Image (cartoon, rainbow, N blue to C red; front, side, top):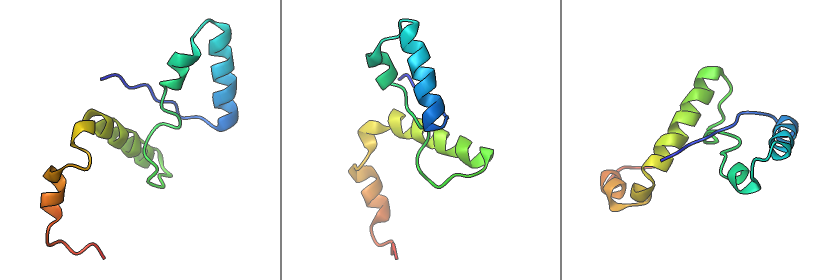
Length: 81
């Protein structure tokens, strides 16, 4: 599994991608970059952002297990209120 993430504002991302295209980087490759990097967990601090990026990497690594019975079994009988 490969993961490339970018943490930047929309303006910086556009400027950065534009520069990469000028250098010959394909748009197909750029579309594989996770931006903004990380899961949307409302992260504010550098530590929280690091956790959100790590969580996204784990999620992508374990993609085959997402929404599987492995976790639904753990939730049986748990009150999610």
